[in-house]
Image (cartoon, rainbow over all chains, first blue to last red):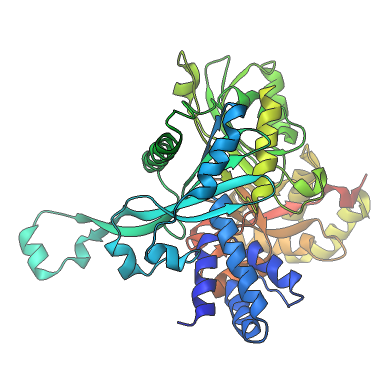
Length: 357
Length: 132
């Protein structure tokens, strides 16, 4: 497989098609709706225009930094910001295949050999802050079902009364987790990878492990350098749910709530349309005098209408009804999707800061 | 835009010989009753509104009301993503998905190889074409 093909394959599995379409547009190349066509255009164009390769590599790298993350936010003492910044800038990268391949993933054979420990493979800075990326192998499983008509003769003999056999197969996936310091807001963002394969996202349990491992690793890094604890628990996002629901700037995509009559509802809206504008939701909310206890919310901001940036960052604060009725309802992380750059991450953080006021 | 009386007249003249007039009237009434301007219907909802008529008759009546100059209905592909959120997708989106063996998510662009189980057809009416 050529370098270009490998790059396109990585982009395809880690980024949305719009990322590639934008780059083609910027390079004044024809674009297309399918990856098959885009791949052909890119492979042909890279030969004549090596700069295209670089911009695709940059895009992949930005993607790994920002998008598809379960993000926890930790406010730090402003007097520590400079020290934290310097720790992140001075980290030693972990020499090895993952570093060599970055931002591309390592091959399946190389991944198999990985020890599964978080290793720093990249450090970066941008207009809003500085950060590092950890990478490692994760082992996930997939279940495969074999119906009786697919049984081989020995299987039929061994399992004469079984109708179905469920096989649990494990596989490896390379994840990219980020520690990022937003200097203006004095906030450390821990962005844990939420992917489980090219197309699957992690289950809640798997996500919790990603988040916990990253937090421990980051705490250790800062403690070993600065000899003090830089952050404790993450910002509780649960109280923000109400404010997000009231934000007129975005479109509410998903809402989970319980009503005064004791029912629990999850509503979703057609992509791009604001749930709050829907007759069913409007009338329903009115019928119970807007007495809803919200437990989860997802909002999409069409930035083109807000500050003329052509992106659609999505913030999802997940939760359950059980959590919302507990004595101390918490949500320690939000799921971020459609983040095209740290400018989008900064936009979301600014929103979160404004909701916290 | 078409005047409601003119529309009924047209349906009577043009679809009575095909035996579709009753279905067409009912479809028009269904749309008129809608609280919103662009109601979307599944096949199941339309069949029910037509008292369980044969799917072939429903399709023929829809084809008539879909065509110019009436344009009361439009066919729309819908895709429900893994989060359960539906999205309108175009024929071109679907063609691209067939080529790639995966659909690019309409909002974020991530690939979904299981899209075939998640795409279905809706009929979206445009109530504003009818003039009262």
